[in-house]
Image (cartoon, rainbow, N blue to C red; front, side):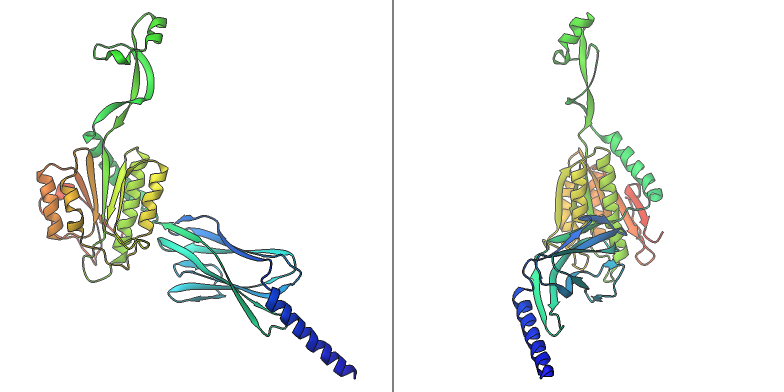
Length: 373
């Protein structure tokens, strides 16, 4: 009789807890993902936090939290993961009644790109671990992994040469909004620059002087057209890093930069253009475009896309081309620019598997960049 009572009680307990878990297991349950930062550079370590809040009496002794991201993000602890084209993470947690639990996962950003954390799902078992209950949660976490910085030892001499060339060609004008100082009147000064209040105090004519501003701007062209049927991703990635380095260095020097690339954007599936701008926000915009370039997609031919812009560039625009593609159609366009006295510089990334070609007549405008160094 006692055995039957215990058995009946166990059956009733099982049925009751099974009913309660099926009905209320996700009531008051909150699960979220949070990144330590929405941006990173290639090679950086970042942390993503899983937060679980259980706002009810019912405990969750076996709760699996799953999400999906890119396989290029290398997690430090990957025992609970599955890696295919994507990285599938699964963590087993035990959350008691009215408890908040947070787990931090460290990962390395091994590759440039634009990554999402998606498919946030939790799987819960009842007290007897005999059933699984599944629920999905919204998550909008994304991560920009910017190109890593190139070697300063190699890059700085090239940039100083470029910057010096730009300085000698720029048009200098006074900016009326950039006040610098008050000085004595000179015969070449105009009447509207006279500071009458300062002149009355000193007894001599005094004028306002202003800082100088440059009307020059740099148009950065990034050509990712394949030079052969082989995938030279090392050259393409180095080209993207160089574009990032030149853009940020020029903008830091106060020179506006625009960007045109035939690389395919992973979100829009189109080529990208960014109009000229300067300041920290513009650097961020350039890096975001470069991070979103998808090298698995074949870019359109560069010359038909950009030849008109290259040939019609204004005297205030300096063209900076980064291209490992060296075929005759591109050389012809650059030769025409040389004849028209257009200002440009061609950076050619190359390696022993994709060597430099013989280029005649453009030697003064070319800087080779060995990717293998």
